Image (cartoon, rainbow over all chains, first blue to last red; front, side, top):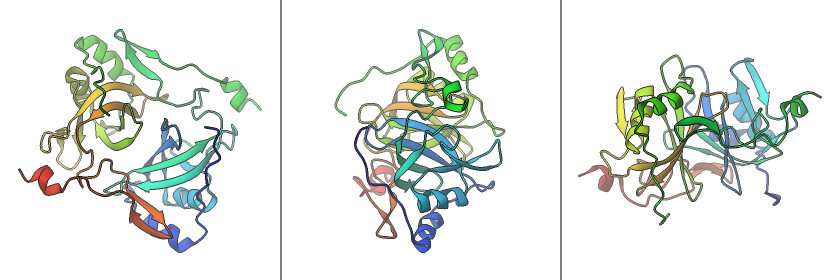
Amino acid sequence: MNTAPAILVVDDPDARARLLDAIRFDDRGLVPCIAQQHDTGEVLMMAWMTREAADETLATGRVCYFSRSRGGLWRKGESSGQVQRLVDLRVDCDGDTLLALVDQTGVACHTGRHNCFFQALRDGEVVPIAEPLVSPEELYGR
Amino acid sequence: MNTAPAILVVDDPDARARLLDAIRFDDRGLVPCIAQQHDTGEVLMMAWMTREAADETLATGRVCYFSRSRGGLWRKGESSGQVQRLVDLRVDCDGDTLLALVDQTGVACHTGRHNCFFQALRDGEVVPIAEPLVSPEELYGR
């Protein structure tokens, strides 16, 4: 995680449009996007993008989702500083899911854990299998 | 990929229900599930589960999705033989996405590629960045 990867920034709007045209957004105009740490393979989170969010992601090299709860663009890390730089953006076989290879600054999860997938069964009980690395107050209390 | 991982089979229906109760299915009764090869970290595919599909997955240790196009349970590999054995099933922070760590037999993608995320921009064009390892005819023509 200490490597400095090449960040994908696509300046050409026509090139961005070619990738965006390969995406089948759902009837709400959304597509799920999985964020994976590019070098470790850790699956960090899943969130949603609109065409506008995916376009901004490609144009800036910083991952921008669409917040369904807030109803607007969600520039990952704009509140917490925990940004995701884009290394590659891949579209799946039928165009309805994205995989973003990213370089995560800090932690991906709003709970302060490095990734969001920390609830699992152990001995028949649902338990957290990872601990917060930073408190939510530190992330959002500034 | 040559290790023989412990397969997660949850015999106790109450334990399964505890994990299922941590999942927030959407208004269609669906939750997205990311499948990741447990040892290499490769993100293989994303598909959807109903509560019934997730329960069967936990009960059998073989991944079962819900096919939105067919409107029924989709026991991964039942046509192609390319099954996914379950190593762990994780629920994300807000309960609306699953991460299945699996042991994939053969290839995950119906195109014969090892994973589904093979479309990406290279030199401004959308190109396949992986080739099929097996033909769809071999997978489904039996």
